[in-house]
Length: 357
Ligand SMILES: [Mn+2]
Image (cartoon, rainbow, N blue to C red; front, side, top):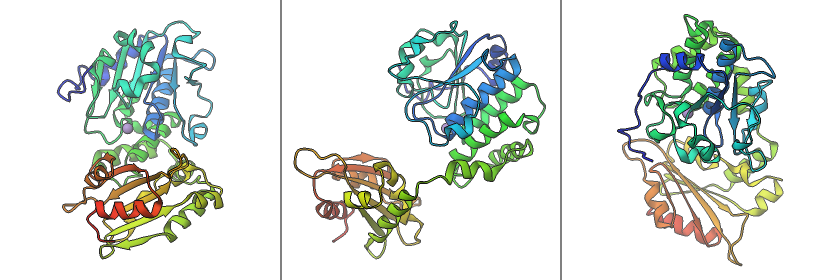
């Protein structure tokens, strides 16, 4: 196994993968654990394109995607009637009751850690596997055929081209809507709905072509981004009203207690993304979310710290601050678990950021 970026390179191209797929009678499509918009979008688009190209029909599909781990809330709305298989303890990959596939297509990952649930099954089939990915690192031994587009914003960019080749159309504009829509979803979600620094002229051209194929941008946005529970909004209001500003408004600290979750009828997952909330303020360079943990260890309280900092030449290294608290992460996103009360944790966080409280 290797995650050496020098060996994580293409050894074939999309045209060759399309030609190879055309010869397959049954294809299993895999993607990473906890699939996101790009993972679901690319796997659903590839599945539908293969079935359309090779005559797979409901009940006798040529391609079926397999998923494991928690699926997004919007999964049903995006995958619709397309058949898929969910892998878990009861339904192991090995319990496949159909004839063995002669092709395995892996999209949006090439890492064994992301494919852990099907590892044993896949290990015996890497010679009939192809991976299409856009990550900078991966394990070359997951698949005999590899197409790695490390500069693509979303894997849906190269997968769009694969679908075009499979369906033998001149332009992405001519893709059927059922293929174009999931491709657009991956492009949109991996670029933060076309806001992140990975947006290139190519991304926008591809998106424009998919819109011409009939994709309904605002319908997709609504399905994926506008489905929060009201309890999450109530919890967000609590988090924002708890905001304290330090270091001349450069550091914002938000806190959430178990009582906040209880009062809002919120689940622990409802605070996802709150550590970025205060970064929308011009002066704020670091946003910290301190959450009282649902699980207590012994009789002491545990808090979770999540820190985010703004991009730029003076970006605050929150990884260093998190390390001082016993955690870690990346320069602009890091976290830690602290065995202390919320008030005590707040003091330690500010100290870790070099701020006098
Ligand atoms: Mn991706």
